[in-house]
Length: 460
Image 1 (cartoon, rainbow, N blue to C red):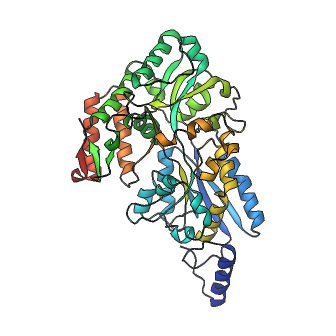
Image 2 (cartoon, rainbow, N blue to C red):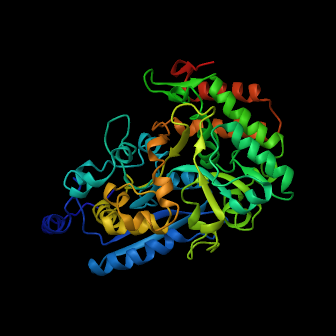
Image 3 (cartoon, helix red, strand yellow):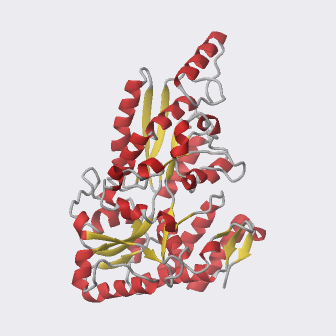
């Protein structure tokens, strides 16, 4: 917690500074400290330093505009799952807690439930620019238990199919390509396997090592495309987690087919901790992967400041929406998540952390970040900006997928459910379990995690 000032004059001075310089000061005392520690993720085995390249000049600008302040950037090098664990350990103690932390929106509710984050409503009520943020993005910042907001969304994303037009030409597949069903996706992958030897036809992230990439890019992009998508993971009306659904088994069967038929990376590679970096910086640029079920951010691997500069991506790579299972509904599916800036409950200088957050999320800085990081804007004024839409050839396509997108359940138990998904995927990828056995194990894991009374039988 921020240090209490013993001298009444110091308290008065700090209050005066707060009122004069911070339009959204919090309710706590303090504000005299001039240093904040800002934590974000540097992915393991990944030379992508786009975020560091963005934050470093932002810090310089902020410190120049606020003489005497110091912003210490603390990148945490880790895989996604390990990053979550490490920042939670940091936030447990006042001695190690950062002042500002980069949070995956999927973990905000669980971190709030654990007491790691503080609400930002006191700051937000006087920040006029909050109204520029899209409603779904703001909703993802709220904790289901109290309705308060615990983060400022930094970006969002959508997901779809990336495909190599040159490899498709070799396989005799016409482009532009837009599959209408899951069967169309598998047919294209089988065609590539038959006609373009030495190329991996299709990547679907799977298993425990890839963490949320497996759950969200891989499994949920399938699950939410099944006919019972509205109750495929969590039944909002009954407020219960869904088990035993046909949609779950169908999605798991797709994963089983990809790896059982040798359409995906070898299980050894697919289940390795380096798979995401390998896909973005090796397999795709080297022409070794034909189709990738992945996110809107992929170009940040290939831009000039990325880990694998590859200007040819603009003419080589095509984009297609992931179809629903049988072409039902809108015919396409996307998942959206994203990241946010949150202030830990034990932050020493929350007021300065808030001021830096406001600076980062201004219209101009947000537009710059979304452009250089190939992410989807969360500010509506940025999303409508022609400069942003034209910053990358893929921006307009992936922004247009937002109406077809789904969001993960914003509940503390989601992280445990996600882990159970990863286990089920891994077991069918390796062939250690049948689809039915893996689905049954998932059901048992979910019941153990949330309680059997908090589950409901899905559509069969």
